[in-house]
Image (cartoon, rainbow, N blue to C red; front, side, top):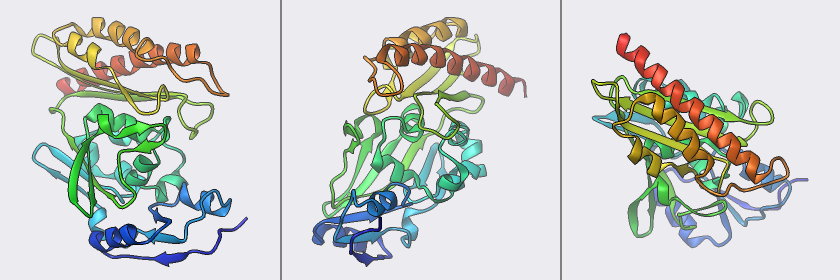
Length: 291
């Protein structure tokens, strides 16, 4: 099938895009097109207007300033994955992108498009949850910041209004020498995760945990952070934290079931993968210190 008739708009500024989104009824924003284009072709979406964000330069780019990493919402996933700045500042992110779909998809897909589509199994909200990211949106009333923990309102429903645009994402950086890991279980390479886990860890001079962050995807409508475990783990030896992460992940939520796996299976996977991710994060931290 082919799309129904629509009027195409290509604004060059965020303000122009917001004006169009605010005044045009039944409009859709076009980012990388990896979700919207198939929906148009099958006529699952039948907008009267399509607003293409690809010509807006202020929505693109990567910058590190002080202790903050900033990524434009229209930055291609491949560009983030291959960025030397991102790899040096937040190595969890490029590692996680090796699990995101396939190279052809990452060449076109954008970080902002994935966050606004908000599939429960998407890796990108998961690793941003581990990084403690904030999402900055702009609309007719100005700009506002949404913590990643508050971004998911319901299943595939982000906290953004139809006339608002996701502008950029910011992450606070972890200290030099921290450990990181991303792992997941999927039916095939490039598929959405059945369960995915992102982990970050740092230790003090006594090799006890000074900070740790663990987030999971595939269990619920949005990413799940193990806040209770993280608070209790501070001051513990690494080996205790590996066990604690596994136990906390397995009971974090009542995992959703679908045609692929049961809720119990997902919760078991969460425990196994969380333990593996935390162990890898600690191993990498040790290697970084020796280097």
